[in-house]
Length: 219
Image 1 (cartoon, helix red, strand yellow):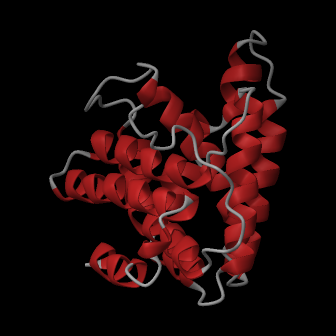
Image 2 (cartoon, rainbow, N blue to C red):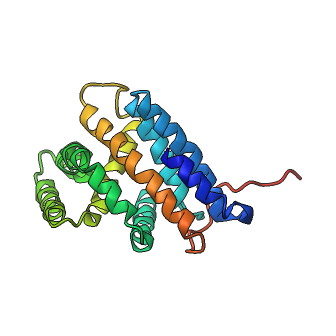
């Protein structure tokens, strides 16, 4: 099991008991639940649990919060992870889930943010299509060259839209209309979330920031 291997690697740094080990423990706990939900054929639950695991990795404590700031935080986290992934685990994960990633997320307008913010709010405004097609084609060209890492940012942008649909009640559990993106999301995160945890485990001193809600001793 991939998480068993991660736990073995984590044992080498667990005595630090600092912000980074707190992130890892939290992420492992939720990723474990996500994998269990996926194996139980509950992709809705798997997507939710995997995103919580991802959130445990990237979220940085701040006095102000906005959706734009959150997106910047997880994109900065992904950029750092790409640079630190010297083993090529993220590329291997993207390659393993590429069919699901492309068909269910990259090529899916229903998890493209501008489809909802511009296309619907703009009363038929089709400008979102230009950005959607440009991004989709760029990712496809890179993948054809064997370069999968450029897909990581747009992929998690789409997963964030999927996360919002699920977390905010914008989706029916096990509903037929959103099956493609939910099933793809579960498959993609099952490959990538454990590998992202692995990058933190292997690079504990890379400055991952202070997480939200640290343990506070009783007075």
